[in-house]
Length: 400
Image (cartoon, rainbow, N blue to C red; front, top):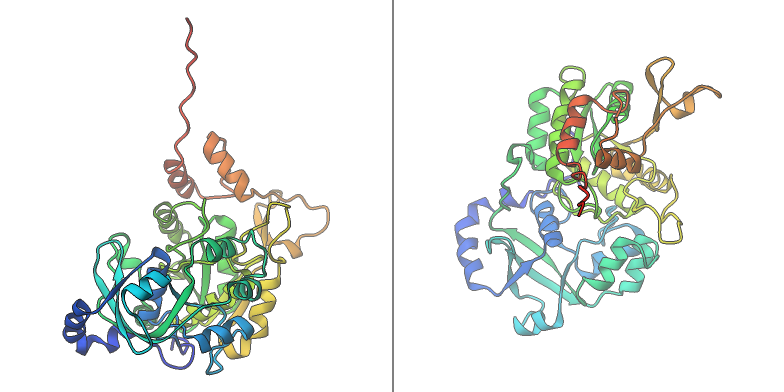
């Protein structure tokens, strides 16, 4: 049996609204429409498919205030990230929006009607407070930059009725909804599932740590990478998914499956880690790996880290009883060349030689064509990464 959803019921609005589909589709054509941004689309998809259970819409002010202040919805359920629909004064006035209005939410990519929202309230958030409480307050944090420069001045709260699911044209078979993934686990006979969150390509060390995590819990592995919005500069998801697919056969037979998550990350460190745990619980996972500096955006221009290396682990640990998903604290593993094995860093005796390649160094080697050793990454994964990082052509000197 897969894990129970957060709040007890999977809020799968697509399934719930199916009998009313035609009626809602007709009504959506007649209502004022708001066209969603890419981030809002990612949020809407996970509201509609139950990935954000127990949410059934964008947060009203009561939920938003309580989430910002103490990681809970107004009803007391743990929830750590504000999920809000921002709009400008101009849009609100032009469409005459007010509490009780019904509006259509539309996809900017193809103009399709996706959902109808019944407005609970329209409120002006305290962005300074949101920045401080949710993300830590550093004005250079990417989520705070986005909040201050891109997010409009009002939030619209209210419940959603689903009209159409979002269209995807890549890796459709891997984009499991929470309900589909639960059915998949049942078919495989899996009752204990360790979920692994990633926004980067996976290498041998990741394979080692996920296999260790699964074996120590007599569980299977869900590789659940984010393919929505990640950190600017990340390797594109088309390349990453091909690399994950190439890595899968390197797992013991039948141990791991790959599913894609269309999440818009906020890079929110401790808050994000709690949110990620809730999302994986809704997808049926029983265990969740929380890494060192999980979902942290690195450091600011002064070289100061936005979060401490273990802040995320402590945050999830604090709520573990209410979250109902077991935290697997990620132990960094390192390569020991003398014995040709990977070991958790805390189990390496003093003086034993270890090797590692950082993400920055890997990108440098991909750009320059430098050697990437097999102890670090499998040749089939390196081949895919090299294909998406073509070498700059050599410069030809022009002689007069």
